[in-house]
Image 1 (cartoon, one colour):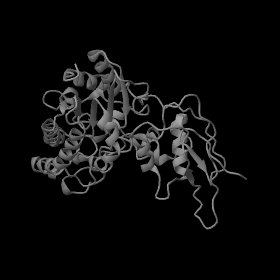
Image 2 (cartoon, rainbow, N blue to C red):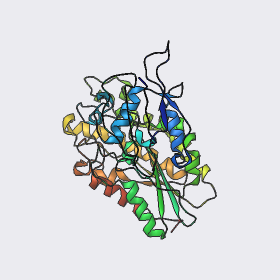
Image 3 (cartoon, rainbow, N blue to C red):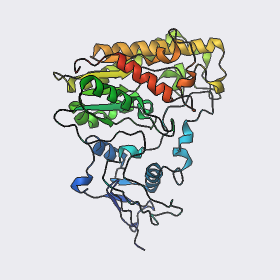
Length: 380
């Protein structure tokens, strides 16, 4: 039986398994028609999702199908949205480890038919998907001569997954509207952030693939404060977690200083490189720091003393992040104190969604307001 996958979403065709090859069900690349081409920056991201043979595996197809159709059927439990639900004391990295189809999907006119027919395995999900990206992703044509371009990169905090905050309008899109109002110019948005547990070293490793959209952007928003934070590590402050809990006796000011010093050169490289790409051009450069999703996290059952230890870690982290950003021409939106109060010791509560990690609608509104308060110079 001829096996095939026909979709303008990924521009892929399926090749039947070849003799002597592992039973993986390979999806090989084919050229896209001109009106199906990916937006700048997304083609490179799509290439990074391929394996070394330039192919998607069957599990990848299932993930793509699940994200496009809005269903979790056939996606597999490891990559499902439930992976971000707090079930242990140690805070999970925001963003499930699945590959995000939202960086493979483009704004394509009309509907796309997704047919998965015996693609090397059984139990394929049934149904079709639309070429329109799921809610929360920003898709638009390139800015016209009188328009402005906003590009966002980072982790799942700016990503605004409907799994994390159903029906929410993310702060990236809200901020774009605010820039439009302030400048009187239409703003197109490319939200290239990732719902993959992305860390700062990982973003640096792929930063070159974002050079084109970042170099052309009038407004750049970076949100990569969450996942590399010391308390998210497998061995915070050099001691492996015990029963998913940090060894609190080693979580102190010395550890906070060491961790901030370790990551400062990485933030320096990130912010300086982006600034160089936009050197000499009018631009708005913005970044956000990290709020505390530890204080008030019910499943952690933290004592007051442990709450204060998380605050000590975050104070050093956010001070390092914002000072490095500012030194490279970025304005740093202080989300930390907007969420956790002037002393950084208040629970974020309703500013976070059901997973107590990602922002709720109120949280997204708050982040957008902090960004707006930084002004719009030199564009307005």
